[in-house]
Image (cartoon, rainbow, N blue to C red; front, top):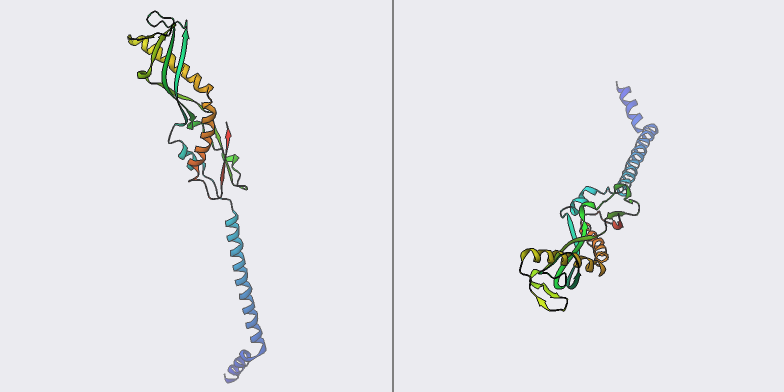
Length: 213
């Protein structure tokens, strides 16, 4: 038994044992280094992986309002009506002066954010918006004044006549607003406002490009 113990002690004191220990240490260092490198590569891959843009979140920010008013014009209009088929107090030709507010904007339900158009490399989100349309034309009844063909002021007392005159004024005001460039103004403002609405929910580093539908 003593001889066996002496051989074991000699083995642990010998070069062979020290060499084995050295190999084990080297193996552990290599393993540890490989583990660290592997972790770094995996972490770097995760950092480089593009962040997925959830278009549902973006759209939910836009559909809170079915319509977005982006331009408003307050106009004082003078409209001439000649032989329109609407006779007011037996006057087929007359002039109206009135104040009107015309609003233009876009239908938010028609705004689209196609997932297949998102540029993850350059971090660009493309948003497609419809052209602006007239949303409303509101004539202030208290401001309407009627003049006959000789430009003499007269009053409209019958409710039916007044309603017909106001409807004509609204139609004419819309055309005047369109001629004044309200739709172009609304288009430009729509793009700016949509960018502003989405700026708080898009991932960091992304930009928004607006395109007409």
